Length: 138
Image 1 (cartoon, one colour):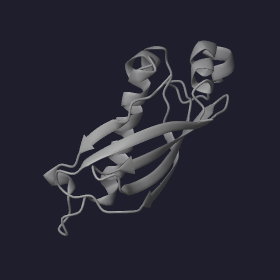
Image 2 (image 1 turned 180 degrees about the horizontal axis):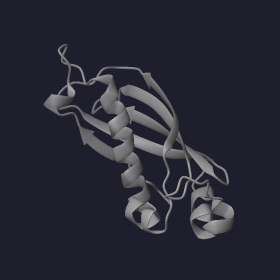
Image 3 (image 1 turned 60 degrees about the horizontal axis):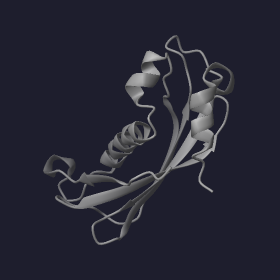
Image 4 (image 1 turned 90 degrees about the vertical axis):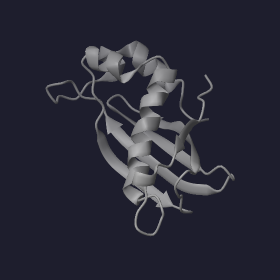
């Protein structure tokens, strides 16, 4: 399955006094991308949450390479790096409209039920688990 890059236009309120997008916004954009990603693979957050699965962030890495400013269009590609029985890791490559690399990032998530217990995806949700495995970046 081909995942389409997500496009985000930097908003004025996302910039700081220097005119650059504040670093915290890149984390928000990563959340937007993950939501779009799960929609594209036909496992939207609404569906998985109805099934009783949540996937909180357990770690983040973010390497800022080039600043973005108001009205820049940031294209963000997401890739599945790793899938285990109870967690997954995705990476993000963000480029501006000129093709300049602006950020490389990764986030790791675990699978929990709504009570906070670890979910073994291979046993409890094998179809979702298989779909995630098939998306691992080759």
